[in-house]
Image 1 (cartoon, rainbow, N blue to C red):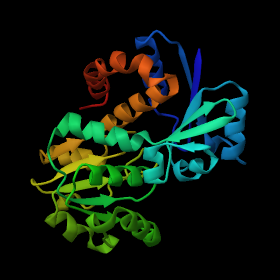
Image 2: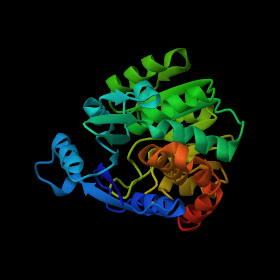
Image 3: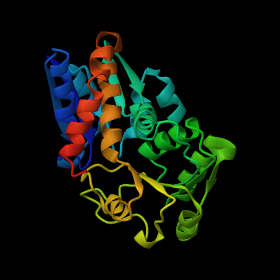
Image 4: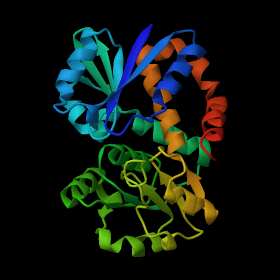
Length: 282
């Protein structure tokens, strides 16, 4: 039995246990995947929780909002994706050492290529420069985006991400989002707005237009207000469900050892994707 976990806030409805247990069955390896809801603990400590999981024989844990950047501080070895993004969503326990990876970065690229093939991101407006936002922005740059306009209520965080990305990125103040969307080709939401615990839409829906594609990193619920508005206008959508699936598959490969299961898992991805989309309202 491989014991895995997920640490974060507002994660009670996460489908990660189902995904990882399903992946385990595909390769004949029983998996126990547990939710660690930080909001249930009045004195939550990430350091203490990681020590507890390691002491209890866990193979590793996924990390989500709001701990992705903090979690990187506990790693003894940092993989390329986590180093590039400056945040981690996957910690692997290897004896007395912890390795950090970022499968949001690799998962976004895989999800994009699965849905959009060789399409270019072109001129993108991205809302949110936190943990998942950093991963997606670096993924967009890797995919050849012509420009990435970073929008965040935390100006310093937005500027830090733009500086990392270099000439492809710039910061757009929140009060200029509407004008940027009307000029752009792509819209990305990497803020928590739209999540079941943070309901709403991150933009004015009237700004959406037919030249756009959109990606919403939120997948709980799968059909957010932003996604529903895009569906109503027949705009091309890359769903948070896709990021959920592809980042989870990449994380599972790290947990169990990629060489053992890569081909077994990869050939099941189309069916897994159909399953999660069919149960998500798409």
